[in-house]
Image (cartoon, rainbow, N blue to C red; front, side):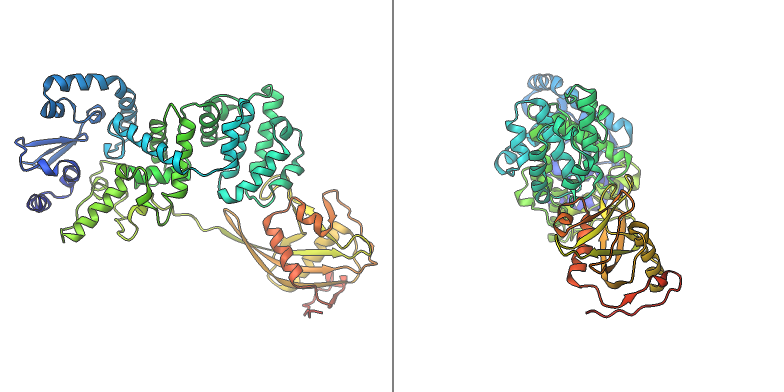
Length: 549
């Protein structure tokens, strides 16, 4: 074995290494006895004499080596019978592979070669899921609810909440949501303010608004009945994309619709060693094709949840638990790690793997680019390719917690409502302005903003209390926090309709963002100072020095 390995490594330059990859993986034990000059496996033909290789048609990859392979093991007659019995079962898989390969130059190395492999993947994954799945409220509700519309609604809410949010965070929000609005009609009749209030702190606030918009459409235009297929769910419901539609259709209605989210992307990229950018159109199409090919028609909802569960708990971004993976034997990334370790232990020259070879020859667009070589310290975490994200843009604002003490009922805080579109649309926040280059200009602008909300102000106490940095998906926002305490006798009136005075208790229950709660914690930790700032500063600005009382 070692002799043949060394010979092949010396003989084959980059292109034939693709073929050697297949031989080393499957046929190494029989290589010395092979009388033929050509060996065929997984759609790749290797000619030892001239080291040429070609990609066969996708159908050649279906089955276990075709007629020739069956004749070698069980005789010609049996080979024909087995091939014929599998032909009908394999036709769908073959068509999918043909579609994949016809769309672009893609190696069959990244696909599933036959029905048996797909069946093994499904069986292993579902068996693991039945043993290890987490007990989550939306799963219990989906399993126990007999009304299909309520079941679909329950799945819809959970899938929307779980987007970009960890499971542990979602559980409490989901429970409160379903207790508050157990049906589509309940949600449709709620106000946007109520929706924002319950969603506050969960992030990505447009998700809650889209949920309510969709619920109203179902009630008002669809007779209260949810669409039953992934295609109609995506087409008829606002805010429902391909992933959410597939999840609802498979879990609630049993449609064999594949889904692709971040967890599934990671699982598929590792199982099939897809090293190209998963955000590209071509790779995204291949991932959706693989997901559709793999989904179990008998248990589509469980299969999709199992794939996502695997990515969330075992096939994690860093430090994956490969020893606990139910599909480890089918994972090309794990096979690559084992080969690299074997090569290193035997002090063999570095092998030219498919992932390094195919891009150089222009044969496969799912392989990692040659500019990103294999990193042995990452192991399977070499897949998927890390996205080169643009750094979030940095912004700054000055924000003021304006407090009015009261003899009865406690102090009140001024909050204003954000516009109904854009970042944090419709939520409540403390008055703020864009940060100015100097403290003098910043105080002037902030006091002017406060006057716009509450009218003329008497002498006030203003203090810079600190800073809060909060990151959104595309913005890193720094809040320069100020405190301004009015005298108890100071009469103030809120002029605009989109402003409120709230007690501390009302503030914590209101539709405010996590960033505002951070700002308020800074305010509570440092009481405003005693230096009075006259409103003359609006016309004759000065730099003020504050001291805490």
